[in-house]
Length: 377
Image (cartoon, rainbow, N blue to C red; front, side, top):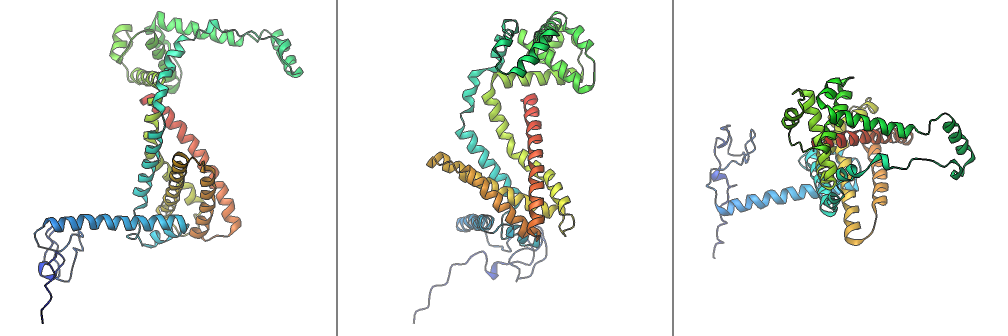
C-alpha cells in the first residue's frame, strides 16, 4: 500500500519553533505559535517566496474579512458594533478611528475627482474686484417705484433726514482710506489702532490694496518699497492678504485645497462633539473614549451612505441623497437606543439636542476652516 506524500513543511510546524523570539528576545515555549510580547510568528524557518506570498495574501484576506464584518455590522446592526468594541471584541472589527479617516478621504476624493472646481479659476474674482468702480454705481432710489406703501414711507423719512446717501458716504470713505494707504503706506500702518485682531484685519486690508496696485511677492518687498516696519504682526497681515489674493485669483484651486483638508477636519471635529455626548450620558457607565467609539462608528456609517448616494447619482443618475440622510437619522436613533439602553422619550430628547449641537458646531468649524484656509492658502 502506497503511503501518501508528506505535506510540504510550512513555517507554522512545531519543528521550526524556537524557545526565544527572534524579534524581541522574549522567552517562548514550543506551544507558542506567536510571541506574546510582540506578536511575531514563532518560526526559525528561512523565508521563501511561497512563505512571503502566503503571509501577504493571508493578511489581505484577514483584513478583508474584518472589513466585511465591520461593514455588515454597521449597516445591519445599529449600535451593536459599538457595544462589541467597547466590550473588548476588537480583533473582529477594523479600528474605528482609521476606518472613519479612510472613508472620509475616499468621499472627499470622489468629490474632488467629479467636481470641475478648477474651471472656477477663470472667474478670477480678484481681477473682477479690481474692475469694479464704486463711483460708477448708480445708487439713487426712485421712491415712487417702490410698490409697498410702508417701504415708501420709510424711504421718504430717510430721504428727509439725508440718510439715503449712507452708501455713497461709505464708498467715499473707502476711497479716501484707499487713497491714504497708497499715498503713504508707512504712515497708515503706524496709525492703525485697536485690538490685535482688529489691527490684523485693517493691516491685511491695507496690504491687499497695495498688492492690487503693485506686485509684491514677499513681505520684504513691501517693507523695502514702502518702509513698513518688519514686525510679526505686519508679517502675519501680509501673509493673510497674500493668501486671500491667491484664493480670489484662483477660486477653483482654493475650493480643491479646502476639500482636501476636510477629512482631517472631520477627524478632529468629532472629539469635540463627543464631549457633549459624554455630558448628556454622563450617568451611564461609559468613558469618554467609549462615547468617542460610538461617535466614530455612526459617522463612518454616514460617510458610507454619502458614498452610496454619490455613486447612485453619478453612475445611475438617481438622486437618493435625501433618502440616505433619512436612513442615517433612523439608524442613529436606533443606535442610541441600543447603545445607551434608554426609553423612547429620553432618546428623542437627546437625539434632537445632540443633532442641534452637532449642526451648530459644524457651522462654526466650517467658518473656522474657511477663514483659516483663506489666510493660509
